Amino acid sequence: MTKATVELSETNFDEEVTKSSTPVLVDLWAAWCGPCRMIAPLVEEFADRYQGKLKVGKLNVDDHPQIASLFRVMNIPTLLFFKEGKEIDRVVGIIPKEELARRIEKVVG
Image 1 (tube, rainbow, N blue to C red):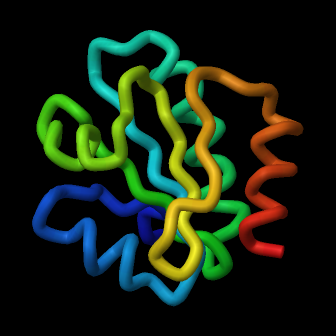
Image 2 (cartoon, helix red, strand yellow; image 1 turned 90 degrees about the horizontal axis):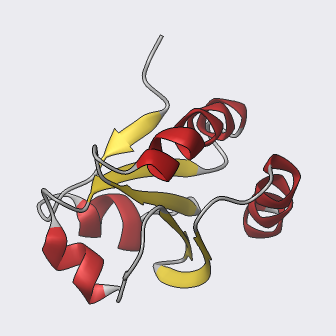
């Protein structure tokens, strides 16, 4: 069983996100962030469910602050949705599972 999420960093962000032919959901998080830990299982569940249709990347903002600042991420968790290399949607904080599912459907639809 392969892991459904990709660990993102400065070295692979461009390749995995902006050059991806598949829509990408980027989860910006940190180990100390309680809400990040709350949304993580949901992100993993959607990564499994949409494998092949949606790439899901995890970016630790403590390890890679440059990317967080590049996308002007002020609060975590932040979920960024990319299609054809461009950010098309963003979620800051915790949202209900149904709302996240709806936004993912819009991106992969």
